[in-house]
Image (cartoon, rainbow, N blue to C red; front, side):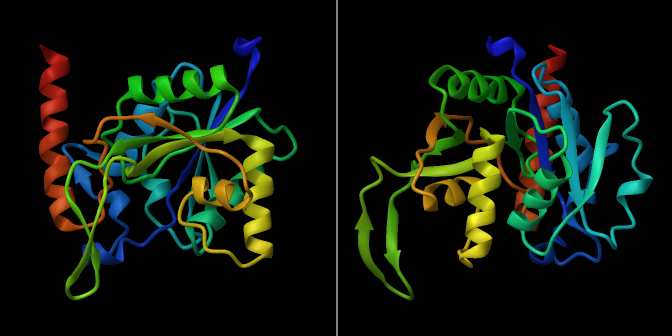
Length: 233
C-alpha cells in the first residue's frame, strides 16, 4: 500500500539572500562547479520515492533558466514574497493532479544526506503523521536581549531542519488557514502546529546546515568537499 503513495518535493528558492550581502540570490553561489541550488536538487533527485520536484523562484529571477537541470526533470513555479507564499504557490500548481505527500526542502541546504531524507519519509509513512528532520540542541541556551536573563533547559529543544514532510491536503489547508488568519509562518511545521496538529521529530545530521551568512557558505564549502572525499573512498 505504501509503495503506491505519490510524493512531490517543493524547493522554495525565491529569496534574495540579503544577509549574504550579494548582488544575486545565495542559491546561485557556486560550490565547486555547481551552484548551491544545483547541489540541493541533485540530492533530491537521488531520493527514489520522489515523483516530481517543483522549484519556486521569483518572477524576476534571471539565473534559474541558465542552469542545466535537464537531467533532474524539475518544474518551475512562481515564488512568493515569503517562504510560505512560495510553498503555497507550488502546492496550488499541482492541484489538478495532487500527490499524496509533499516534501519541502530549503534551496540553501545542499548538505542534506539522502539517507536522512529516506528515513524521514519512512518514519512519517509508518506512523501516518507529518514530520521534520531536526537535531537535538547541544549548546547551552540563554534567553535575553542584551543580557542573559535565563538558562533554558535544552533536554527538549530541537533545531528544526529540512526537509519537512506532510500529507498534501493537510499542508495546503494549514498554509491557507495561516494566510487567511494572517499568522506568521516560519516553516511548514509552524503552520501545522498553528492548525493544532502534531509534527513528528525525526533525528537528522546536524551538518545539514542552511547557508545564510558568509560564514555558513565557507563551512558548507568545506563540508561538501569532505562529503565528496568520503564518497570517493
